[in-house]
Image (tube, rainbow, N blue to C red; front, side):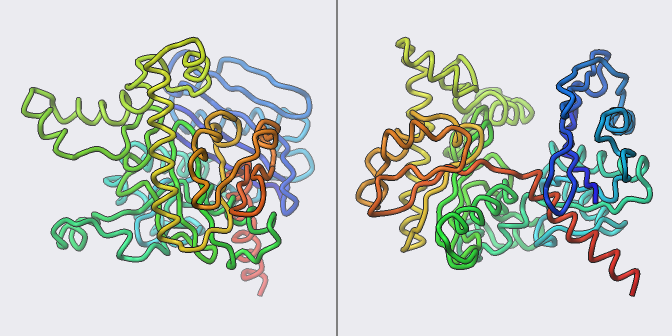
Length: 402
């Protein structure tokens, strides 16, 4: 069965085409600058990698361009079998969606309603869904929510110390994000250690331009660093993470408008804001090595915040079987992993420098033994979405037959 996975942003769409259930990746790529005259598609399959300009004035045209490219490739949509189902990454599912679901009108309405909680993400996610439904009307459409894995977080972890009616009336609570990634690596960590997926206690660190950390007890999320929105928690590429909220009141008193504050916290802060140089950790590591003090400070802040969360989640969990690193930084930034783990020996975290140096983008165990397993596990959010989509599409087809 061919499954197409779409991750739609406001001006870009990432895509992967799988054959399921074996998760065989046939092709992948992205369209960037949707709505711009310089829109382009970058496509990769067995024949190689190509990049070319396209016409993509909106998401409908972008999805059509993806399908056209897939049909033209050696493993395209019509090469042997059509695309049977499409899995969509949706950022915010609120409290309603605790797992992936087949999309219908009610689901679309709910995703649209939750756009107020994720105004930068849910609207383009929904645009991609509508475009895929238009382009592939016979395919099963499935929504996979970033928030779903965190549906098991208890009230003590998701409740903010604000007037309770804000939760009751407006849904103000911790939701958490990157759930598909955290779930995937927690399951892989359990398999790596020979444990049942519901027997592991672990701390999963998804570190990239957007970063979050999750406490997993008995295979289920019980706390996570991102909150009502993806802004809370760790220091990120351009997001500030945890700050004193009164800073915003102070800045407002000094002439900052609402839109400026939103832009400041989401797009101009994090390691970019501290370093004044870049939100790319590779650039910062290189600059710090050449003596750039603000790059060094940005890296130290990034690592320090993660270290504090690891300590807090270790206390919350009681027993920790594994500390897991994933995401672009978690999988590849050797000195960052080492700096995060330095000083955590009292928690049973001891990294072997040689093992750490050898762990680049592959499943690896990098601890020195005798304590908490420290693992590097490349995330596969698209593969996890494809697996959920395959399961739901298969169940739906079986129900129709019966």
